[in-house]
Structure formats: structure tokens, C-alpha cells
Image (cartoon, rainbow, N blue to C red; front, side):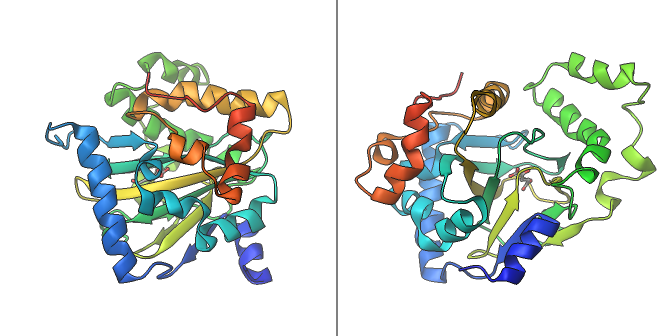
Length: 286
Ligand SMILES: O=C(O)CCC(=O)C(=O)O
């Protein structure tokens, strides 16, 4: 159960950190299963390290990872923050490469609560690629005022071949020089909070929060679990579908596994019911 202070912290700053939520013994198993999923996804090819390698449905593929979705230590804070209408969305497993430029995962506000839970499998510090947050940027007006920061991430996505270069035209049309650092400051020097973490720690944040990572090594390992308020309207559902169309080609593999979609665990059944309702059980790499 989160304390009233933790809830207030989350609502005000947009994130929470839980230290050593998982024991060293549990992390050995989690680490091994994560590696098994990532290795399987590489299908015998080496990780080249020239761009992020991301596997969709990461935690759904192995029993010890799958259990995290409805593990009390993760699920209860999420439900407390999002409410009883919480829906399981998806997970990803990642080998990151270098910096991740500033961005929010969500930019629209019609959808309700949106929480990402991140576990880093190696120690990460401010200098070695831990998550950095701009506190309070999950809310307007700060969220909108920071919009220009997204250019760095968009350029990164263009370089990785997942976005078309024309996407920058809308910024140019507003008279923005996309080659100048936003706010005249190098991205890594922007005022932000660095969430240093070690294996066993759990970082939870509102997906509207601006976040990034700087100074990390090639192959930085982390995975996420994502929970949303189940859509109450067709408009909210359309946002999720649209976002999936935009990001689906960054993730390898199917997003959901039958072991989760058809689970006999009541909590999991409740969490995936909206996926069945909206026809989202077969989202896959395009
Ligand atoms: O660890 C990183 O490089 C960034 C993680 C991130 O941007 C995310 O999970 O949305």
C-alpha cells in the first residue's frame, strides 16, 4: 500500500522509485529469463550494438517474468495510482545503445492513467545511463512547454529508420531551427532528476513525463511493464491503436502471449479483459 506521501509525490512529480523490491535471488532468475528472451529474439545473430534492440511481449514469454505482471509488489501500487479500471498493455525488453534523448511516451491526455514500470538489470548512475526525469512534466502546462525537446528523440528515431525525416517539417514550419539544442542547452545539461538504480530496484512513472538517459553503455539492459486505464471511450481507444501503429515497427515479435491472454489467474484475467474487448490480442511486429 502506497502512503499518502508517495501518492502525492507521484501526482506532483510524476514518478516513484522502490528500492530493492526484488531480492538478489529473484533477480538472478529474472536476469536469466530476460537474457533467454533477448537471445531467442536475436535468432542466432549477434547484437550489433548500432541501435536499440527491443523485443515486444518480453515479460509474457517466460514464467518468472510473466508473474511480475500481477505480482503484488508491482500491481498494487499501479492499481492504487490508476484505479480499478487498470488494463495490462504490454512490455518490452531492451538493449539500449548510448543516449536516449528526451521524450514523453504519451502526449495525449484523453486516455486516463498511464504507468510504465522499468527494471534495469545492471547498476546505472547519472553518468552511466540511468533514467532522468523532468519532474512535473507529466502535467500541463510544463508538458506542452517542453514539446520542443522531442526533436532530439525524433532525430534519433529518424537515424534508426523508424520515423520519416519529413516529420521534422512541422517544427521547421513553426520557425524552429531543429539543429539547435532546445533551450540553448545540451540535452544532458537540462535540469532534471537522475534516478540511479541497481538490480532489484523498480522505477515507476507516468508516461506523460519527459524522460531520457545519457552516458549509458552499448547494450544497457532494461525491461518495462506498461499499464493503462482501460479505454472508457472510442476516442481513448483510438489513441492507443494509433500509438501502436506508430511504434509497432520498433519492437520485434508479438506483443501478447496466450499464457497471459488465457490465464486462469483472476487478476490477470481482469487485466487483459479490455485487450479482448478492443480486439488487441494479436498486435505484432509489422
Ligand atoms: O533507458 C533508456 O535509455 C530510456 C528508457 C525509455 O525511454 C523508456 O523506457 O521509455
